[in-house]
Length: 508
Image 1 (tube, one colour):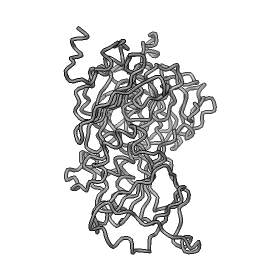
Image 2 (cartoon, rainbow, N blue to C red):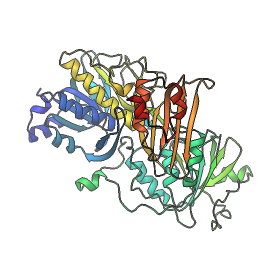
Image 3 (cartoon, one colour):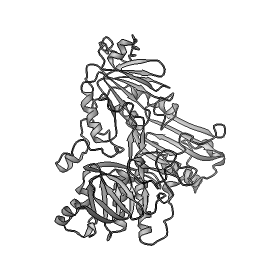
Image 4 (spheres, rainbow, N blue to C red):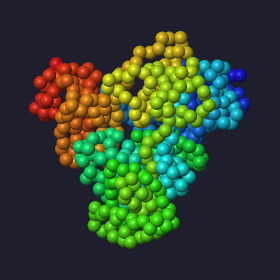
């Protein structure tokens, strides 16, 4: 068998259709982790063959990568057709297929098409699947990839009221983006966006939550628009990127202005059909009106679905969006020797190696099972998927080249996440929500400028342990340095947010 990189374009097409394939490196998954791993491998090992196997007809690639500070970076995600990576890297081939099983002893992967792939090292970037409230219900959607976003946009066109369930990043962005209908937001915690910020920061965002904005006009960059082709339907796609909502028009029936009502500290108890609603002689909870001019909806009694919450409230709606997180796809392949972590992800060490020789994992599908730094923890975020995929490539290349494992860099010393919520730039650093800190042994410094910025710094023993920066604060570099260096700030700790104090003078 020839290595994939050695074949001509014609031979490549024939080879990918053949029963047996071979590559030095195989990467499974066309999401951010898998593509980052593939791109880095192509640079580190330019004379070795790389095969990317993806279930989707498109891949997600990080673009406009900006190094904010030592650890922090921001980037955008673009969807590209499979040929994009092959054009960028001469030693990369991409195959649309699904991994079914691995023979770890012989290092052979079996695909759904019954083809086999021999490899020296393989990285499993299988991603995660959305946790749906109800499987098979056409009125319940999980937002995961471009296809599900497009399905949501289509169903929203006739929606008078939408229920959004979940309190993470996608749920928060959805509630902000949906316009032209009523939005019921059900969250388990006592404040919105609790995955990322505390009640104080949540309160800062409330004015934006209830705003009725104009729908965005600029379309987002899709693979079909870039290449002039339309991806096939019905194939599970990779996770959305950090800018997924940019340019997405989320417009309801438009008969009334946007109204948001949040139900706190509750979960969905049951989803009821109209028949079940009538048979039980239940009474619908009135939908509160935060704005004027939203008359007419309450009189409607023909809701196709009713949502019963654990706090006893009951609301009718046209559509339910389930955004309650993802489950690692580690159980989607047959590899009995793979050890799984407590969260169901593939357990990996600090070099992204699994319990099986030659098998690595990265992104949502893996579980960080190493002794972690004090200020870093795993969250299934786009930024960490990119970091893990990139790092896995370095470790795979070192093993292949007979080099010692690379020394871990600062990316796993400090948690960092750069994103946008409600139109504001948001930077999260370290133990930003006090994760793992004793409530009685740390304190917070807070600075709020309404509609402009929200800053919260967490200190313990005179050292900075976490930070939430909302808006253009210009504090990210200072905070990152203080977190990485863990300097004892002494009496200066109380004055970190004092505009009259120049922290640079302290370092000098």
